[in-house]
Each structure stands twice: as structure tokens, then as C-alpha cells.
Amino acid sequence: MLKKFVSIVTSLAMIFAMSTVAFAADDTFNIPPDAEIVYQDDEITIVSAPLTDDDLQTSLRNSNYGNAWVSSSTSGSFTVNNQHSGTVGLTMKVESSSNDSWAYISVLKPNGVAYLNNIYVDPTSGNGEGRKYTLYSASTGTYTFSYSAYTSVGMRIMAWMY
Image 1 (tube, rainbow, N blue to C red):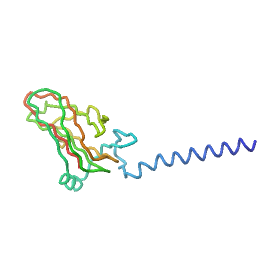
Image 2 (image 1 turned 180 degrees about the vertical axis):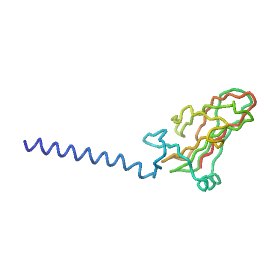
Image 3 (image 1 turned 30 degrees about the horizontal axis):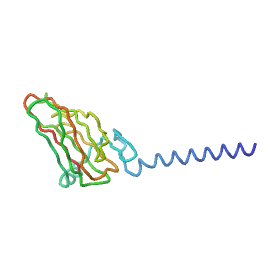
Image 4 (image 1 turned 120 degrees about the vertical axis):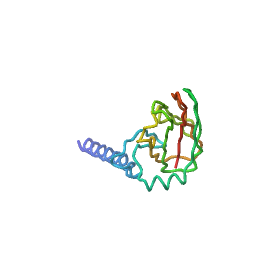
């Protein structure tokens, strides 16, 4: 009987210790309470949360940028050579003279693993400022932005990592 009791108490203690560690990971990154986790794996956590204007202006001065011009509906890709690691901001934006233009964008990490699949971006996304994400535990390297785009007037697809 004593062995069963000790086994149960030990099991409960281990479960409690593991759950505390799992929740502590979010606190390490200071994820805002209103943030939505859009992707998470062993290497990276990505949340969709607005940055303050001061954060954005400082970050964009230190940004890495990539883009593609498309004159008609097509698919393709471009790269961003990210020089930052740790907590990294990501903005994806589309500019066009027509609000009917749009793109679905997927992002591949430097190791070739895809995440953020088929993110819809049009000229009005984020009130014209694009889709903004925060990447925790991001690595340096070349990120690939693949897109499927629709436009009848042309558009620029852009990405910044900062």
C-alpha cells in the first residue's frame, strides 16, 4: 500500500513539474496577452500581435528586405537574408493601385521547413500596413517567401525582417 501511495505522489509531482516548465516557456518571450500564436515548433514561436509605432520605426531601420514585382497573376518566390536572431519582427505587405490584387504567401525557414502557410495579404491588410508577426527564437539566414498572386494591374509583394 505504501508503494502505491509513493508512486501516485511521485507521478503527480512529475506531472506538476512538467506543466510548470511548459507554461514557463511563454513567459520567457513576454508574449503579449492579446497575441495569437500562429505557429510553434521546437525551434520557433510566431505570434500575430501589433508592434508599437516606436518599436516599428526602430526595427525597420535595422530591417532586412525582399520583394517581387508581378505584372500579372503568377506564382513565384523571393528571399530575405535575415541578419537578426532571437526575437524578430516580420511584416508582409502588398502594394497595388487596385484593392482587388492579392497574394497568398508562405514562408520557409533557412533549413527549408515551411511555416506560415498561405497567409492572405492584399493592399488593405492591416489597414494598409500589411500583416505583422513576431518570431521568437528565430535564426539568421535566408528565408524564402513563396507566393501565388492575382493582379490585373501589377503589384509589389514585400517582406521585412527586423
